[in-house]
Length: 532
Image (cartoon, rainbow, N blue to C red; front, side, top):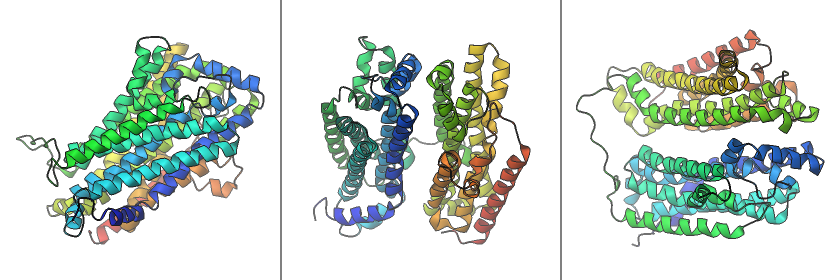
């Protein structure tokens, strides 16, 4: 039997397991680009307006650092894809990270690879199947975004450059995650390596792009795979050859992953796990839940701090960059307020942030199901711990964690904006309150995940589909002129449009009641069903 025996069977199994995740994720990330491009073209029918808007954006170093420089500021295609070139690449990176980790280190940690190894499955087959699946996802996404961009009306060569830019980052992280799965002995450890590498790559690119062309520090962008995405310069210079860097990195990293695989035992990593402390601190389920979530929440806190700092720094340019009644109307329909244009901008961005933080709440609650399927929940429940106590501990961490992330985002926004206008206390109160006002909708989404865990544990993945549906209806329902009753199904459609709008307490109380009902149903189901 060769080391790759059974690769085809494992690939088919992986495709079956990801039959929902991959199509929905690919369609979503491609749709993000096409929707943004179409909206931009509609908002700027005259090229002169587009050029002025792009030059205004590029005059802010924080914007350049966040999204990267643009080689051709006079192109409306560049403006249409200004934010989504790098953002889409990061989404694709996260997708392939999930796929590779799920079918390698996670499967190994939960004992399923050992079970498969009892059959006609070679030592290298699981890693090969995961790499092949992730690679196919990257290439398919690159081709689809190229075709979709051309269909929208963007330049053909630039659209090819966009696809190559995304493929460069995606292929690199197929290799990065494959190596991370060999280095770490746990799924969480592999996540730390892969996501840590992503964070480092992003910071290096920010430093390089923020330094400006011609400076010594600008060369740092070439050291970052995310910098390569920008260096392709889609819809500008169209340096298609930069994609070769991603292919080289992919081949080297995947080869390294297979070499490391041969040097470790099944169930272990190249780096041995640390020995725990002599005195146990995790004496309660609450302490255990906090410990498991601490790294994730800390990462989110760092992310929202950076994001809020950038959002606050671009606020002075908003009125010039987004001037015009048509743009104001679009932002208002996307969840903005009816106040000043800056208030509308903040309300729109906080609406998107609420959806992102809802994903954090769902992920934290779904750890209940992950612990259950891994067999660890049974060990915890064999003690005096009740099912309700175990679930409430994890739910409490999700509730507090999401509140903390939104509070920090509002605080940082208030500090930055307050420093600009000379009213720190007032802006902290206004923007902090606006951020926290999104919590009821976030908690509804979190409670939906708990309801799936308790009532339909086999379908917990549909919690992500519910979130995407809520997001589409709540954020784009009015823009697409959907029926009011359909838009009203989303909890995000009932949030006050703050800052700048009025607070209506009845919808917020109703959302909290819905969250409580869904959470109660989930707890009831968990208490009365079998633990699998």
